[in-house]
Length: 382
Ligand code: GLA
Image (cartoon, rainbow, N blue to C red; front, side, top):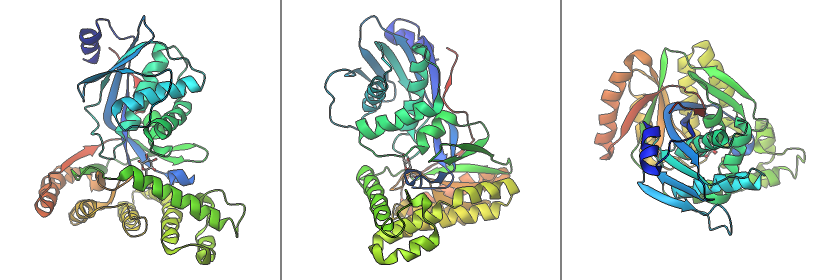
């Protein structure tokens, strides 16, 4: 147990232990930073953090996954953004301090084995939210999941240098067992969407880790912002691509360079899919749900250009299986994971047959596993 490992490492028992889930996004990709809708599901793969205050003023963190201890520079001059695991911890502590929450000296043990890193399952949001939950408890401050999700987003933006949206921290903060969540990224209103037991989400990890993803991701965001500036020339009231209807987008064609138009078209159409998928799942219309997932993937591949050969192949072989209703990449793209909507009674067979087909076509090892909707950040017993 993590409490025992903490005691062996730091010589005291932890005061708080918390865990938070990774996530898959069922649909609504690259819409969150356009103020739009998303349909993520917190998954039963979690990061756990144990914490105890220290007598000195230092933040000392040990990552089991990286087998590495760091004394974190939480006070004083800031350093350049970094993608290393400790940048997330430093970033969250600094962001808490900037928001007026003083972080005392703390020993932290981080156990991330459940969520693979760099796979697009949001191990970073899981780490940030598990840490936020553990610190809130150890520091005896009330737990406000959405407020902490916003602070976690700021920490990643400012200290890791990825301009990620609000979807992942909210999914990790506020998930609910057995459910996906329809999230309005402007108001942060959440509507839970029960995933019927007849279907299961299967994660298909291509084995390829994302390359150049930060640069490409930040570039897509900048293109969306530029598109909005252009569209405002004819529709001054729109604030984000979420406010742009398909017909308004068509009227703006003369103002938009070809690539910018394609990016915007993806966002405008994708923004309608989370509600449509929620309805299809509620109605038990899994073929319609699958078609929405396939359409989302095609748009991400052709218009938003964030898929990859491996993601395309893994979705193709999945779709060819009789038990699969639909498949798409999930998360930012450029490698990492895809998901398939699979008939629950045939999940084992699906995995047994599709995984080797992908591996035979790509000479790349894959990992397939079924996931269930899980609860957001929570305290754990020691
Ligand atoms: C990453 C980001 C999210 C979101 C997705 C794309 O996961 O962290 O905020 O933008 O990409 O939908």
